[in-house]
Amino acid sequence: MLMPSPALLDQRFTECLLHLDGGQVAVRQAGSGEAVVLLHGIGSGAASWLQVAMGLSERARVIAWDAPGYGRSTPLAMATPNAQDYAGRLLQTLDTLGIERCVLVGHSLGALTASAFAQAHPPRVSRLVLISPARGYGAHAEQGQAVRSKRLHSLEHLGIEQMARERSAHLLSASASRESLDWVQWNMARLQPHGYRQAIELLCGDYLLRYASQTVPCEVHCGSADSITLAEDCAALAAALGAPFTLIHGAGHACAIEQPDTVTGLLARALDASLTGSVL
Image (cartoon, helix red, strand yellow):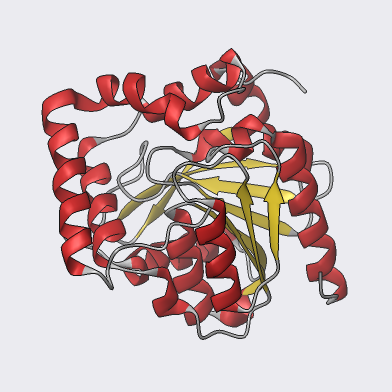
């Protein structure tokens, strides 16, 4: 597979701006057919899905957004948004794109938005795929406050670029390639402080199991070398959701960058299941 780069991103996963009530959303698209919608994590952006999009676009319409406050997407109006607020912006985005139904994929913090959207709008989601899902700390106020303080302190004292340099390796396994590390860092270095602050509030003030009661078929995946959302925690979350769980062997947290072929294969299988109604 081709190595990710800004030039390849512009050629193969092009960006467009959607003008919505309350602001704009930047999305990247490739391919045609049934829609697969990709939601990134707290330290990333739409571009992190580049290699997956290139592989999956041979059989689907692949869309990835820059979440509110990321890239050129307008932040949400409230200072402390929850997953339902992000899901509301996602609904506007899909309506504007003319997407009535999709396979919805949430990585890390994106899993909260994906789960909230699937609970609120089940007819719009044929299958929910959670990859290295962040549980959120909303059910544990003291722990959430500690995480919030730590992340805001890092943002204030290190800044985005230094955070990207220091944190990128933690999102990958010890055996990850230099190209993967560079791409994780490139994406993280493009965070916008205001949007990142709002995402911290989402992480620390909401929790995924709040959105567990839903009828949409769901599956959970996690890298075996993930040091952010540990494999055993993701397996326990899958059990709580009544969802099948798969390990991506050797992958760290940013598994779509570190092992794009494997993630592409998992999403292709999820797409097939959504079309046939089969159970994985």
